[in-house]
Image (cartoon, rainbow, N blue to C red):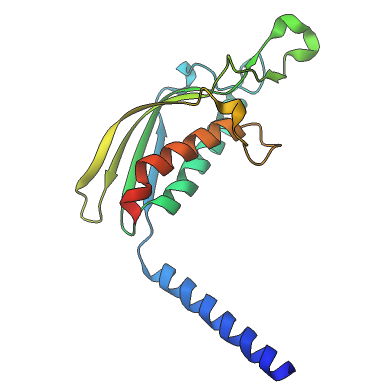
Length: 173
């Protein structure tokens, strides 16, 4: 019995390794994300008072989300260029609530996540497959299950995920 179990495990491991090798053989999708004049974005801060460190962290998180998702939805050899021209994160700061609330982002349905961007999708030969400008927003963001629940950018990342799924899912198949 132990020998059969070991044989099944070895076959499964070999199949996983073969699948990983096949994925490594195909050229990976290239993704370039640029934030155009982020100092003029509607809302990209971690507290009521702005800081450059907040901008870098938050924009880095959004960029990482785009790069990770693009790798999932783009086909082999495709490349994607995204220029983000405005960001308005879900929620807002309400400093009139008191001094203790200047670092608390209040999330209400009147503060939905929004993002303006331009994109170009290129095939392996550099031919433009698709391009355009998009104004992303999720007015029903509080009715979605943003995951993980402790991620402060969960609603913004979910909006990006929805856009990528709608824009690129069919092209990758």
